[in-house]
Length: 111
Image (cartoon, helix red, strand yellow):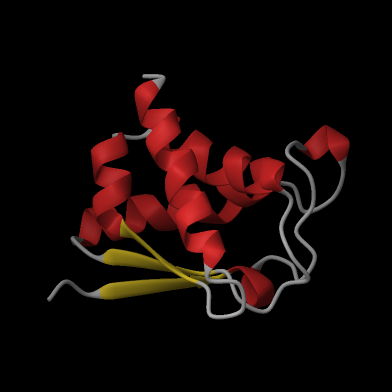
């Protein structure tokens, strides 16, 4: 089994994730992607690890935040690798896992 790196959005980024872009407000999907998700993803890839992204513990997510972070990750990186490396966890709102996967798959189609 591959080693696992964890990224907990609520404790490492914000309990109140914000809008799509930095210009639209604090704790944006763009900021999360650039400061945490993309570097941690690249680290996981370099180590042959999986990246567990814990979506629990926040006050909720705007769809624009999730698409800006995860959709853009799949546009910037090899989408097949994103699907293979990212593992999503959401006990609070299980539907979020499928929602985020949808953004990754849709971003793959646009490449």
